[in-house]
Length: 324
Image (cartoon, rainbow, N blue to C red; front, top):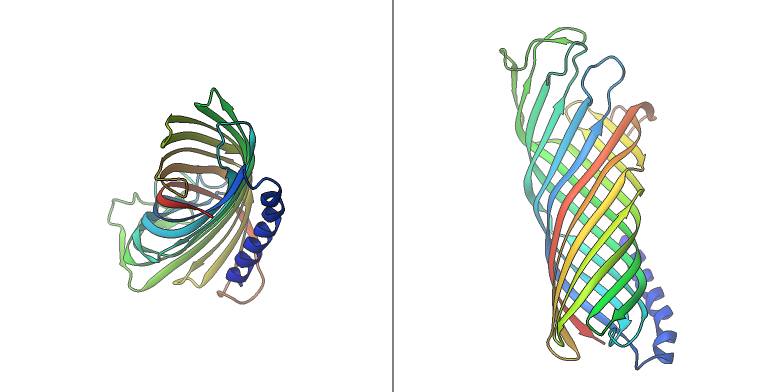
């Protein structure tokens, strides 16, 4: 279903672009860029406490992507020579991750009602099952003295990450009574895990304005610095604890996204160019309600408090731009 949707979007974009190309075929061109890159960072899952416990968080789960390789395509419609005058540009990109081991997953809980000490800790091998990016940007570019190029644009992004933690170990503070625990380093309960323990899926939808400043150092060399920031963030996630047979669904919004980036490009000829891109995408402060049901996949969800989500990833890739 997702492949059909992506194909339909590409067809629509191409149909919209064709009339413009017919009118301004000498000024604008369509290009296609196959690319290969990697993502490195973490997805964050948070459960906020009720008024009884003392710590700022009730639970925090960190899911590594260190690294996850991906491949993709970038479709771009822009001026052939943006140094001549101001103009329009747009691009549409798809990136698909390669599943595999990607570091570790750590789970921490603070359940004490009398202090902020850690009460539960577990660590598992993390496996990234899915990594998917869909980005669309459109904006205007303004040249200055045929050397600098200023751009302003809007970016719409959809991201989906899916993981599972397997094997590993756990360390748990001994419980004295409800909400009261011995320190976790005093004869804790030690547990070894085998097989799949927990799975997590995180989906993001963001809308962000951005600006960039580029410089033509040479007719063949171009570099660009960019920056995006926005509070327009939505996140939906699904968490399944296999041992307890619990399933959690969170609906969150808000927080802050910011993303600085760098791009270097070398033009081989009028048909081909090679580019390297680097960016850091950070999202924090996204909050909302969490819902729980048991067992997994059955029954109705019940509202169980407040949840949060975060993301911090470094993204770098190489691409070959082919003008069509």
